[in-house]
Image 1 (cartoon, one colour):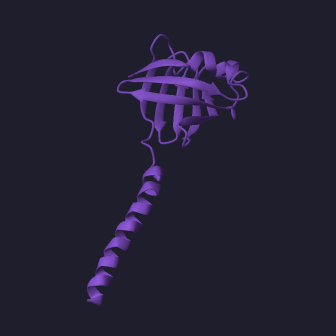
Image 2: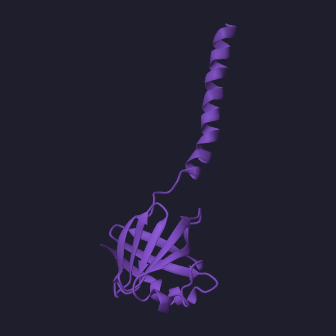
Image 3: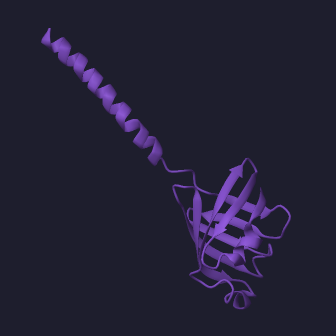
Length: 140
């Protein structure tokens, strides 16, 4: 009789442990990586989530003119935090005063099928990006 009681208690203890761990595991799951090339619906701007943590922004849709290369992370609140790491293209010298290397900003990126919305641009010098980045995007 005692062994049956221990087995019963053991089963319930295992169930209790799984139930108590499950919420923590589901909250800690990593969100899917941001990926793909996106073009602003009514503009020239193009963005590409090139690698796991690299974002390339082409303000005029032409990489040879200006390409802003950034590192990004995504917070638990869904905000994408970005830091400019490199400028490329023939007009990079004209842009570096407005978009200096090291500039940090953040935004909220919401994807629905082949469409996305960028909103809530924030940061010390985010005004430069706010008017250009915010809006609707289509997957390319």
